[in-house]
Length: 67
Picture 1 (cartoon, one colour):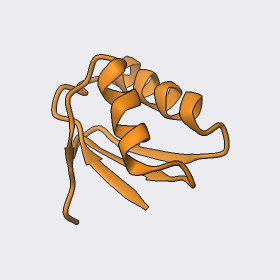
Picture 2: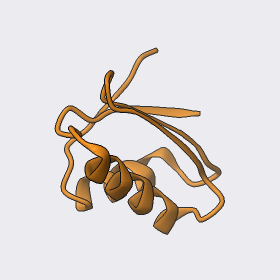
Picture 3: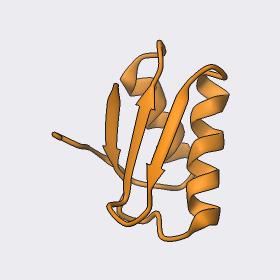
Picture 4: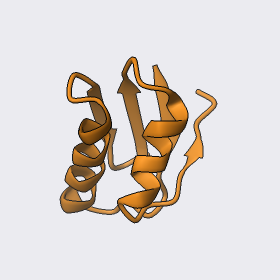
């Protein structure tokens, strides 16, 4: 599982945009968004770098979450 901190994600629209971006990389990915913690958890067979790049291309900076 990959975990990304996405500090600019502030609303449901943002969460939906990030989820759609991840699904474009891997349609089978499981994506969980916690807006309060600004955390995105992704279970995917795609490389972490591709998921992160999709989040960035959707307009959101991220960092890898350590927990």
